[in-house]
Amino acid sequence: MESPPPIPADEARIQTVLTDPQRLAAVFNTGLLDTPSEEGFDRLTRLAAKLTGAPVTFVSLVDADRDFYKSTFGMSEALNSARELNGRTFCHHVLVSEDALILEDVAQLPVFRDVPAVASLGVRAYAGIPLKTEAGEMLGSFCAVDFQPKQWSKRDIEILVELAHSAMREIRLRKALHEAEVLNQQLLAQVKRVDELNQALSELATTDALTGLNNRRAFDHSLQLEMAVVERRNIPLSLLMLDVDHFKHINDQFGHDAGDKVLIAIAQMLNGCARVVDVVARVGGEEFAVILPNTDADGALEVAERMRTTVAQAKWLAHPATISIGVATLQIKESASRLYSRADAALYDAKATGRNRVVMG
Image (cartoon, rainbow, N blue to C red):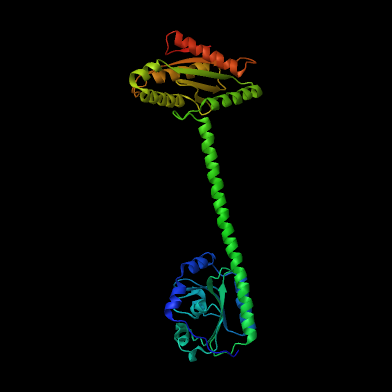
């Protein structure tokens, strides 16, 4: 293909284009740098070699300080393994020209004959078609190389141009897939975050902020669930209602912070006396409740007494405290509200008859 030899760009202009942030971002955003070879690109370089007769063809993405070869055909084993080349290359001149760079005998052309690949690899003829985004950013080039002077035909150039367009379609496809994967990961992260927030909201809705115990809402829900279990399995169910004795005196004499610490400490002791299946809840200011599944009256009294003595004998409370406990065991066909009322009435009796005691309702 007869044409006047191209005028090479000066080093300063090449360096400016190479290091342009927008261009480098476009190259990076392809998601192809340092990725393995892919058949979609390799098919194009094989076809380019077969149709043009060039012994070496490749797809080059030009980074700031190297050419990365996404696909190669016919390169030496070392270069094919490394898949990158440092230093000045013919592809850099393609970036600057923004048009096909056709060199029939680089040894006869000033500047081009000084490109390192001429001496190190024996390159004599080069044809490079720019790989340009729709926004005009230069990514690299689709190239063919010969080690002998070569007169590139018009057909050769048309073939390389078409294959360069195909390479850009592959690049756009990989970029779209990469962006889709990034969006998918972001979506998964957002879904996970929403799940975590929902879990946190659920815990906030069912957990007492001060003591970490179940709150009244969770207690009511758990009691209804246990009532349903009793109906299906005909097993006993007991309920404890507990109140901190003279709690107002603790708040008035030592302050509300001290009162909060007492409530937290008692909550921990009640939890320590309960089984895994038991439901310990804070249902009022200084009032607690404990649901005891599959527990009859004797078992409930035993648990209640253990809780009462644990609190009364605690040496690590900053301000000594005691609790009063009302106990009720579910009767045949009794409702949850009736069970609650009996336990609460027993608690009232415990406080009215001296406190720091357990009363069965």
